[in-house]
Image 1 (cartoon, helix red, strand yellow):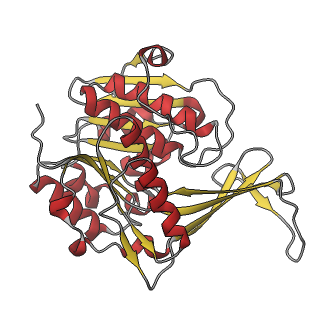
Image 2 (image 1 turned 90 degrees about the vertical axis):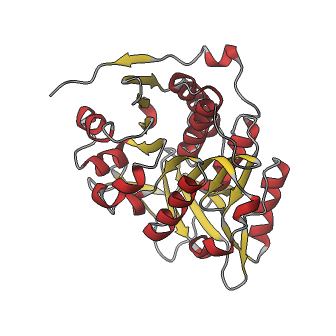
Length: 338
């Protein structure tokens, strides 16, 4: 039995953003071996580019995760920093519409709400222009900690601010709140040596394959070394998403390595897919303490997101049914001793 130390099941901490999706078949692709997807999106300066579609949504790791966790039946509060503007009102409205508590949200009058412009090429590939704005201005000393206590904390990227990560993670430990941590690239670039003391206080560590390789100081193809290096840390579960291929979970406590191939469905947009999987996994794990259940709930939730435009549009309306769960296939893999 988990010791309940507050009124919430989960507190989701990170960013809240206004997202605008701009889709055009006129974004030209040019090959570039150094680009993340192998291509650059190009358009001529000084020209007018016809757009096929423009969609306004809300995003950010904290708000995306909070909506999933709440829809999956967990009483959830959200902590993020927003500007004093219409975009902030829209972010808060979406959270309240989903019955997420918002008393931990801070409003910064001197900054604008974080803004992401997602450029979508006709191929479905994307580039994201990011303005972090108020998202970087979260003041931990001003948070009403006594009012947002929770059994679990779901921590997403804080823009690489090591001190804020330390303060939050140490705070969760003092309150006996278990931690699911989904750090971003800015945190991971600090390296395993600096992050290890924080990971040692983490229950669920959530990364994509490239991020896990960065942390393990190896190449993305060396999955065996990734799991052996990170799986030795005193965590309960190592979660590794792998894009179109699917996702892996290493159940550290039971020493089981699970893989689920990607579910069939037309990929329209991948923005928010990582948040959907990570929070979906965490919700399933919180409810059952079972990594295989978490893998199923994560896969189903991420499928919903990638088949819709926007980070929240495809989030499942409720916790998956047994019939939905059975659609997710799981393989048990072996880890080489080398």
